Image 1 (cartoon, rainbow, N blue to C red):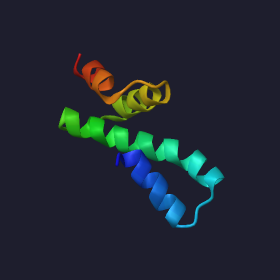
Image 2: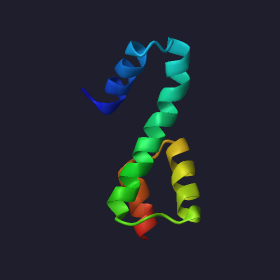
Image 3: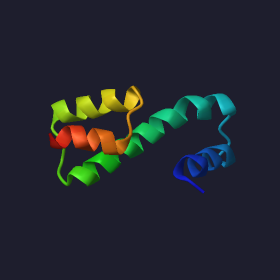
Image 4: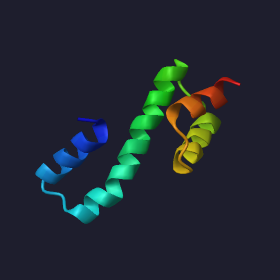
Amino acid sequence: MDAEALIHTALREAGYGQDAIGSALPRIMRILQAEDIRLEVGRPLSRKERDYVRVQLEIGLGVPEIVAGLKR
């Protein structure tokens, strides 16, 4: 089971409705992806880098593309 399905199931079992899950799940997934990026880079990100990562995740880029952009 992938992380998104696991979190969806956990939220449903915790009693959250479909509307709450639908609005919260994308944000939770972006937070987890941002943490994946920080781990890949291997250091804390500056505020400017965190803003860059947030925007890139919101437009739909994946972790590998964002990490490559940070390493340039």
